[in-house]
Length: 480
Image 1: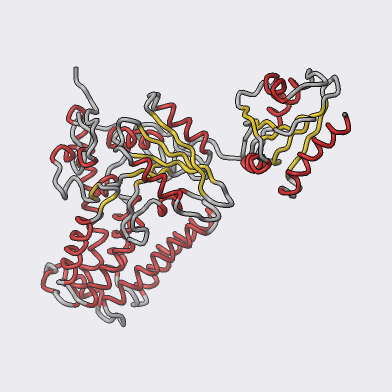
Image 2: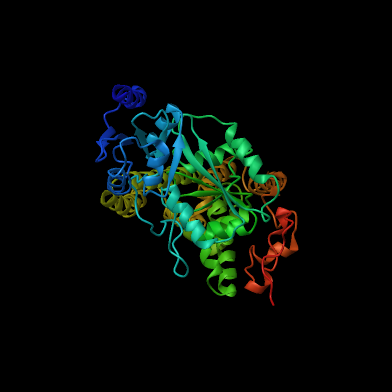
């Protein structure tokens, strides 16, 4: 009988090791004081060994010689224990970082939640820095991120559905929404779209963002993002559905409106007058960054009379003798800026800082003195780059559009710029994100939502949730 028990334990261990052949898969066999045999299998570096000893090994030392699986489950001090039957499930749980406990003489096993993967601590995200307001940001651990959300939304209507994405990575994805607030059927639609896409690995939420996007090849994105739990929770309360991906510090939210990226979390923690001014400034900076290089080239090539006379004299003295045409000059300057930006990001921190200084001062000054590039071109490109980064969530889109505007200005001229702007407006008017127009609340015009768009009204004017979402639960604030 004892031999049969030992064969059963060894068979279970062999079944796992036949699949997980790596040396970092640890099998820890131990006995109780009365001789009952146990085996804990886990991935080295993912499971918490200290908790394994305190919550599993130490309690099981008191187990009887004929201890069953259910009795062992009752002895364990770990709060997260569930039954397992298939070896495939054991393999998946071990790969996920949990501990699988085999009991001698039992075919089934126990899955113990002792996952403790390496990760960084909660800190302020680099792209959503605030002076006023919370400074906590999401990290790469999905459990910590869910805890940050639960910390702020203690409602019983907060629903979290755990999904898996990636055939080989089995990446955990949390689909989060407020039941009774978000549009009916939206969580199910998103879940269906995720299930329709199969890929080997999902390392970041940007993969999920493209999976649930209706037009993933478009220049304009269809999903919002959030790196801070306060912003994420505020979006959930407006009726959106959120997706948190294990291994990514950036959460995805839908539906999405372009006006979201003009807003910032700090707008809601400062005076409404200042928030309104800052938002108008962001929009103005966005258009300046997009159109200024193109307008400069078009004016020099086709409509020089639109430049004020005194400014024209200054520009003429700067560009006289240059070997390059205005369009080629602007292209070259913009190309150098993009290369410097990419190199400074990829290089080590201190080398990148030195490279930025060298590129900005040495190369720029030398190019001007050598007569290759004019001073106005450097000023315009530098100011354009600064303006675009006032809305960092739109940088991917705006930098691409800036190149297109520059090409149009150099080939068609001043008439091409308003034509392309009109085309973009017509395109955006017809585009939606899960039934919500991208240009809402401006096109179509939703008067109630204008109080939190370009203009940031006081808190009492935000009584209703965004009407562009078509929600049944419309009341957000009740003033008693």
